[in-house]
Amino acid sequence: MSAIANVVDGQIVNNGKTADSSSISKAVEAAKKEAGGALDKDAFLQLLVTQMQYQDPLEPTDNTAYVSQLATFSTLEEMQNMGSTMDRQSASALVGKYVFMEETSATGDTKSIEGTVDYVTFSGSKTYLSIEGTLYDYDNLKTVTDPDYTLAIKLADTFVSQLNKLPKVDVLTKDNLEDVGQIVEVYSTMNSYQRSFLTDEEQKVYNTYAEWYMNQVDTDSDGSDTSGTTQDTETVE
Figure 1: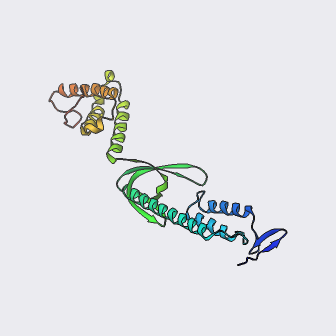
Figure 2: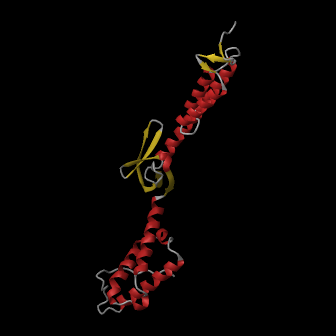
Figure 3: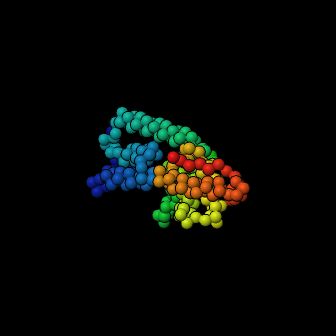
């Protein structure tokens, strides 16, 4: 069986297009651009079609080679489908978790988002996480934390911030009794896990205020808490 091809200026022309190496190179770049910089299964198929389009009609590619390439294409497709399924399962497991995300705008500005995942939704090949009613691309996920851990961190930070606003213990007066009483009350509501996020030095500082508060309450004439509340005062040895 003979093959007939047009020759223009010494080059083989297929369907009016010159079959040179630059055609394949351009096809590769176009495929990468469409795939967002990575060669996915669609890009692979596009390259295969381009290879068939620009093959030398006098020495066409053997059918066995095409079968091998199609088998590779099928394997790639299965792997990508499997990866997509695993991503969806991983994303679904984030419901109820506290997450941190980063989004980059078209101008290059980075925006940080954090919150609890309400639900997960899928659109085509994309996965989105809903945080406080807004959908965010799953690909922008940075960190996942346990809600108890996040609460403990924030509570400890708030507690230390309020503690640092108090005057030094040696200059406290009755006017500070209510403020110190609020610190003592917050500490009494913290469980052992939440208290573990306080450093030894912060625990020591708190103990000095708690002892001062206890002495003020104990020396009150009627034995009641002059701040208007009655509570147990705890210190850590």
